[in-house]
Every structure is written in C-alpha cells, then in structure tokens.
Amino acid sequence: MKRYLFIISRSPYGSSHALEQLEAAMVAAVFDAKVAVLFRDEGAWCIQQHQAGAAIGQKTMTNVLAALSAYDVEELYVCADFLNTYQIQTEPTLNVMPIRLPEQRALISASDVVITAQP
Image (cartoon, rainbow, N blue to C red; front, side):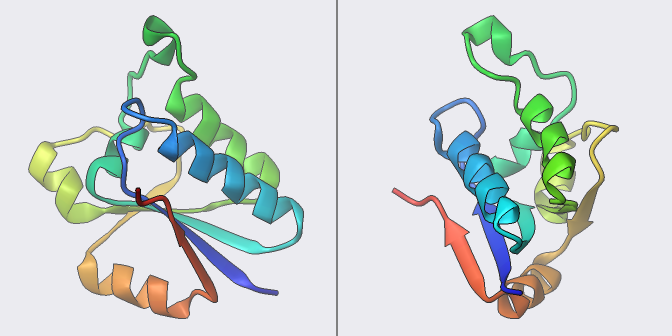
C-alpha cells in the first residue's frame, strides 16, 4: 500500500487550496492508500479552534477535518514551531500531532507520494 502525504501550507480561507487538498486526501483514502496530512506554514491555521467559515460563506475547515476519520485518515500533523510562534489553540476534537522540522523531514522521506498545492 502506498503512503501518501498531503502537505497543506496555505491558509484555510484565502483560497480553495486547503479544502481541495483535503478533498484529494479523502479520495486517495477511498482507494486504500495510507494517507497522512501535514499542516505547515499558513496551513496550520486550518486546525485553529473556534472557526466560523459560514460567516464568510465558506465551509468551516475544522468541520471538514472532522470528516477525515470517516475515510480512515487519522494521521494529522502540524508544524510545532508555527503553533508556538502564533500561539494557535487547536480544535480539541481533532487529534493533531505537533512535530518539529526534523520529524517533518522524516515524515516526508517515509512517504511514497508527497502532494502539495503550490501555485
């Protein structure tokens, strides 16, 4: 089974990149891929608690993330340094593991396919 890593590094509401990455992760999981998601840089805002996407006419990102477990996507990681720098409080219902740069590199190296949404 191939191991897929989706890296989300764009903010959740500035564009559709983060949502599209999550949807792609769900599709990969449906086809029996082992899927992990890493939130880094601006993408770490995706897991911030008390989001209200409906206030700006968009889906609330934490609600979308909560659906990942239904697709057996349970490996969620976030850049620990970004969390600390911006003092982000994560959504408590999400099981997201903070990891530092060396661990991120190891995660990337251990993945068969790495997918990012860079412009």
